[in-house]
Amino acid sequence: TGGPAGRRRVLLKLSGEVFGGGKLGVDPETVRGIAQQIAATVGEVEVAIVVGGGNFFRGAELSQSGMDRSRADYMGMLGTVMNCLALQDFLEQAGVETRVQSAITMGQVAEAYIPRRAIRHLEKGRVVIFGAGAGLPYFSTDTVAAQRALEVHADEVLMAKSGVDGVYTADPHKDPTAEKLLELSYDEALRRDIRVMDQTAMTMCKDNNLTMVVFGMQGEGNVTRAIRGEKLGTLVTT
Ligand code: UDP
Image 1 (tube, rainbow, N blue to C red):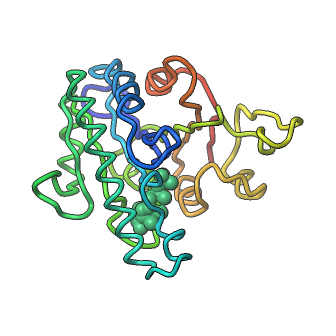
Image 2 (cartoon, protein in one colour; image 1 turned 135 degrees about the vertical axis):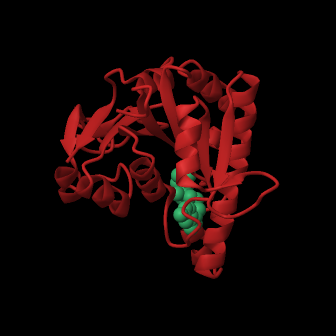
Image 3 (spheres, helix red, strand yellow; image 1 turned 120 degrees about the vertical axis):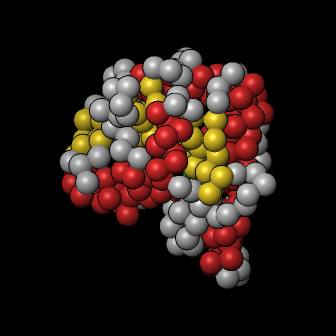
């Protein structure tokens, strides 16, 4: 699996809410903590990251308030780039070599998204952070996580969640009978309308046989453990 070094390669999806610590914008201490957990795995696992932007803007929400959807989506994508830069900064402070690749060209702050170059960075042990989603309105960063994982040949997609530690039969915050699932198929998730990621993203994973792990950020060292491939959260497979 992974590159010529035979290392495991993962695609970590960090949603915007992870960066804000529940608030608007970026919470530096939260991002520092995540960066340190990622840094602990460098050299051992090849890590690519897709970053969300919901802590700044979500296009669908802005369009409900009257904005043009595409323009609002571009705002959403630009928000993800701010998260990328924050994560890059704390990773570099932790001694990790990183590259940000943006799907919207902005040469001063990020490389352009060039898949083969991204793979090369991973092989060299650099962490690659993908920003600006797909560069396309009407897409989500979940879908981009699946797409980038496939294009850079990641072994797994790791969906980091804040607030839940896996997939449940019902919302564990509302339904006390909700049970955590250790394993789940994409078909079952789609059938039961379990929204671990959006439907487009799930369909893409299912059709291309891409395994996903849904895990909670909260536990001590959970990001490190998920990257290393320790069993935690819920495993979703075709
Ligand atoms: N977005 C987009 N195209 C993409 C990725 C993201 O238009 O390929 C926009 C969209 O408006 C989305 C926002 O960027 O609401 C932030 O991304 P997302 O909601 O996926 O972030 P997350 O929920 O992971 O924080």
